Image (cartoon, rainbow, N blue to C red):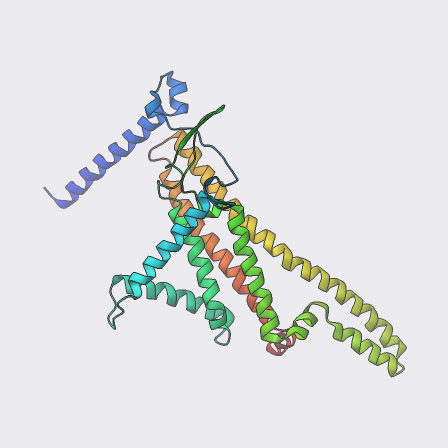
Amino acid sequence: MSKLGCSSRLMVILGIIVLALFLTSFVMGPLGSKFFNIQVPKNLQVSKPFVQLPSEPIFHIGGFNITNTVIASWVTILVLFLLFFSATRKMKIIPGRMQSFAEVVVEGIYNTIEGVAGEKHVRAFFPLITTIFLYVVTNALLALIPLWGTWGPIEHTAGGTVIIPFLRAANTDVNLTLSIALVSFCFIEYLGFSKIGPLKYIDSFFQFSALGKAFGKLFKGDAKSFISGFAFGFINIYVGLLEILSHFIRIVSFTFRLFGNMTAGEILLGVMTFLVAFIAPVPFYGLETLVGFLQAMIFAGLTLVFGVMAVTSHHEEGAEQH
């Protein structure tokens, strides 16, 4: 028998198995059981997805609640530590698989940051940008493991039985996404003050120098230039206030972009698994993997871009344009 014939037969058998699993899960699900009027045993039923936006406390340390998202974030930190510790524990000139993987990841992120920030600022951005990207994407990938959201004590409520999972996707906790957004915001503002100086950084918002030039025209007796310069100076101050407001709005946009996308993905997976338990949710797992990478890239990328804007004064921008 030829190899082509064996592979074709194998594909047919695999297709039959996939189709059988899909039909079985559809018939045993809520849609199929209602359509065919079938009573599904309780032990074979998939529980209804329960949307709980606040994370659930698992235990307490003093007066602090340790929630399932906090535990999941600790697991993420532990996974990243073990991954890079095993990759760098015995580094060799000819790297093994783990070392090669770590080098590819680190070098890829480093080159990307260097392409945006330039060689002058790459080392200032590299630690935080890399941490944000790896932390967010690892949170997203670990949340796709079936252990997340399905393992924990069962509570009986008026609406039915509810599982309180020991592990829940860390990115679905608004407190965690807010904390990353605050770190990103403080990092950007710190770089602006430290790299170009407090006075220049404040002037990049309000441009008080325009008012100074206007008063200089007044002392020289040029009243017409003073009036126009004074008016434009106040306009620049108003624009600067809007710019400061936009910096604080970044915290909100960073927080709810990551929280909203990750929470929507969790709900989508829960609904699809409830409706058709097998096969049908698989493409959505692939979609959520892509969304996790994209959200990590967006969060880290925007932090990088805003940071580059903060360390580049308007005078440097004008010189580069010339």
